Image (cartoon, rainbow, N blue to C red):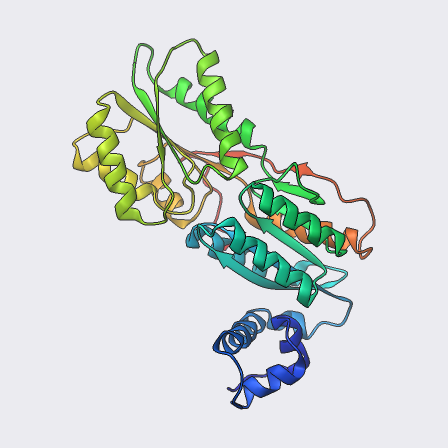
Length: 345
């Protein structure tokens, strides 16, 4: 296995001993396949973070543990690695544990491994369950600060939350739907969300429902819970909802970073027009759909800025930056076809 990295750097990145890494690199027997894969992942991460290895300064290792559809997890990885060279005064290196629809017990195991191998901080996106909250408490007791990303765990011992005010985001979506549907248009709204264990989506839905109910229009809501990242399954689910509810004419999709093209394909397959379509996060696909006029607006927050803030909170907790770590909500940008910002990644 050829690579330009020191065994010590690979060992830190993988959370293994230098002796174990050396055995893997020299193809010696007696090493589990999972350990070999762990070393290979560490080398790949170091390849992407090569600029961080040549900078002198205090090194801060941040573990990123994210349970989300693959497209969002990869967006988190890309956003953080794009920000790493600008993070100072410490040299920040990241390790990633990315899962999709993992049971809470698996996430608990990943957090336990972070404690066993050591870390300077954790950035966590996970469902709000008692098991995960207890695991966060154990990580904090081990002296490792935990920062939640995008969806909060407010009952846990986490250090701070970084992300938008999700209830305000849902309320904003309801306001836009109400403004853009013509007076007298009795269209129902299809609300698409993921796993109900994520508090962020719970809060978005509460904000949306409360604001729509307060508008006095009596506009009906049809909820669709989509737990997998499979576009074909999502399309079929939307087609079934359209067949069952002929009044659906608008969509609020919390299913960000992919999947919304499948929703519009379902409308097209039924010969239906979606008059208002609101979703989250301005990725490349949503940028293209906005510019083509296929969706109405994207409620966006800068993921790179959020991850920079996560790392700064960890550095503050470690004394590498001045100030006390506090939660500060990210700005919500309403992006329409007329104000699409230039791509950053």
